[in-house]
Image: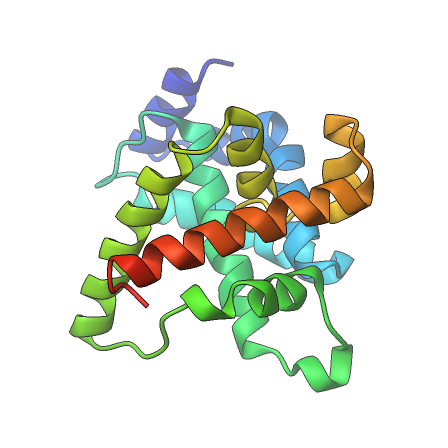
Length: 185
């Protein structure tokens, strides 16, 4: 079924929208959730919450790209879950490792000033990513948006794990220097 048809089902509040979304994007969203959470039960809960979230937010939102819309819902739900769970009890997940890697860039707090800074930072990072090669950009996005492991990225791009780690390190360092230069840290 085409995305437009699925969105129409959501707009009509037809329950088939959920089953069609699960059928078409369940694996995609499950992959994101699994990369971030690692725990099968958490992944199942997040997937249910993803499609419920879509149900509750369409309308008023009408996504142009349903995959991106569902992926973002999944990712946000996973990140909220990671933040709330006790990492000492469960050990470090891939998300915890990634948060450690980019801790210099993450704003904390929930006030309006921090939200504005986060949006400015997000825009800057997007612009920065278009200044690096397409391969570097894709690897960065795989790691820090989709939370792919170093192993998965290395296999996907045919690189050694050490090359992927080195590329990510250089990109983070370059980003860090650019953020400093622009007084965004």
